[in-house]
Image 1 (tube, helix red, strand yellow):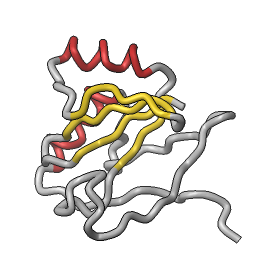
Image 2: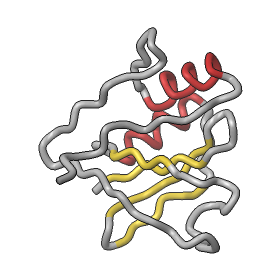
Image 3: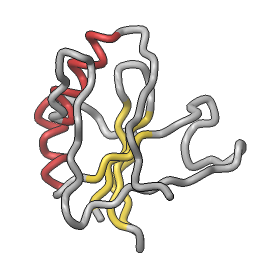
Length: 115
């Protein structure tokens, strides 16, 4: 019955700062209505997954973690280095792909994934 993920929504204390960060760091063009539409591309997937309350994959104080799929993780790492955004977790390679973590201005971990 489900066609896909319809969106990701959350509250922020620093709307302008957070919008600017996601725009500059992840190159997400945020529109005047404080959001954007990310059109899926062929080969892109959206993962919907639950974690136990005490799972250590990401901090328990963070109820939700964003994961963005990227075309080329090494290019993303170079971009992040150029603009001074440190990696919270160095590149990890597994059977699921390549992953890094960065932190947004409000301390949320954001996972970047190359499949």
